[in-house]
Amino acid sequence: MKNLKVIIALLIAMTAMQAAHAQEKAEKIQLRPFGVGLHIEQFRAGEVFNSDFVSPANNIILTANIKNVFRIEPEFGYASYNNDDENQSNKASKLGLGLYGMFQKGNVNIYAGAHVEYVSIKLEETSGFGPPNEAKQTALGFGPVLGGEYFLSRHFSFGANVMYLISSLKYTEESGFDDTEEKASIQYTATGLLVKFYF
Image 1: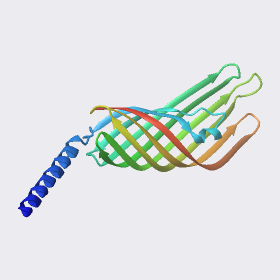
Image 2 (image 1 turned 30 degrees about the vertical axis):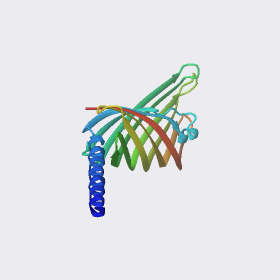
Image 3 (image 1 turned 60 degrees about the vertical axis):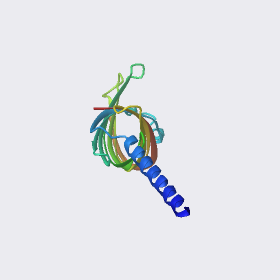
């Protein structure tokens, strides 16, 4: 009788474990192959180094998922700024690429990997005396990324990420009297919010 109770208890435990495993497997989100979204980077610590420049803060992001384990994400952005009172114009563009490994838990997708980006910013200032002054800054950055997204449905997700970037900067300035060129490197964190639609 005692052995029968043990056997029944083991059968119940095994059945419960299988049911839990099946439920977990069924509830895990199945990622769609392609997506498009908005990467909102309003919190880039690196912007403190570029007070005279305006760089893209909101970028279009394209997502390609390979099954549920690997992700490729190209990213691009553009920004422009004109100040007629000071005769200044600013144009900036950004290209980026992320490569990530992923795993899922329920409706949450966690990813980690590497991100590389190139930013080009051009500032032009005109005056009534002589030729315009032009300044250009380029930055090539690379670093690790950790992020996650929650799927509100199979097609919509809301998420966030954090990255640590090491960037190489080049600054050139051309005026009618003298040309200068400077190089530097910075390291900083960048956080962003992501809203995506998947096809």
